[in-house]
Image (tube, rainbow, N blue to C red):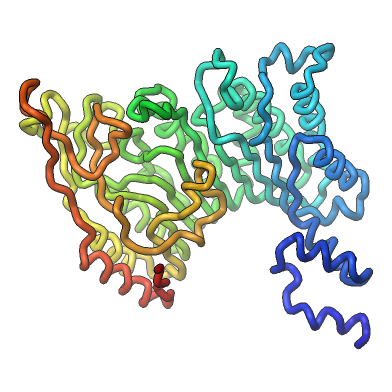
Length: 439
């Protein structure tokens, strides 16, 4: 067997795991040349020394630098104590600060990767608004520093990137005019945008998470800040959040027009009114893939501050047992949605509704795992929003309270319906997608 025919024994080298490709490259020089092209298509860089040095070696070899198409900049494990003063103080020789400083010096060198078209920036999933907590993972000041330099580097590229993913993006938008201008420029050339949003979480009192101001600023701003600049070119959009969103905090997508959108993925997005369904159907001329990951229908909502919720004020009524809370119901069920998709999304070729197991992997939102959602109805397909209760106001049934002397009691829930499952199977059959059976 001649060396050129050796490639015929490997039907698809690119599909193999990187560690296998690397081992094969050690066995044969010809395979080594091929495998290097595959290994360098996607490169991950961490702040630690050995990773920085490997990346620097790639940058300094123009042949290898030209092979890099996709880059992951992963600062999720950096756990130093950050303040801007410590970072800019060159006499500070703290090990973690030095590590970060040396890592960030590589960021402006992204322009030395002439074929870079896709980039991912990943932070730690834990975040806090206040910078006073010394035990906080990656405070807001740290994230702002990294984001500002990262955005400046991307904006300076001769050829703009086409895909941008921000993993564990804290729910705080930049405000510096230069940073906003650079980001707007980047967004204007994107074909794919993935926003995996992390929110401050109180492990012992999760009901307090939504009392923070930040999510109630970030999500209403998301359409104008992140989507409007990218609307003309965007073909893929992923919006995942570590907390439920859509109703409270509200995200109104009705004014967002994405004329070329082919793929839409939503994680922990809560449906509570028809306009949300109608917005998805408005993408019917182009949409070919739709992923709904842990996205409940809220059949009842009761909320203290309806200004922070997505429903119009006239949708609410007074309900006995809920004191002064605003109460509303939603009568649509998943079979209504699935049948609407079947009619209104004529080009749909891949659909997944269900829940990804990756939500429980290190308690972070799944990144680039849309196609791995376990398809099917689940225990949280229907939920309520019941303000004032924990560990989260998103629960299975509404809690009522007659008075201080009477015990609270729960309202009725919504079971997963046979009609839902039937409508889901009909949709999958229409688009030619096999329903996977999970043991």
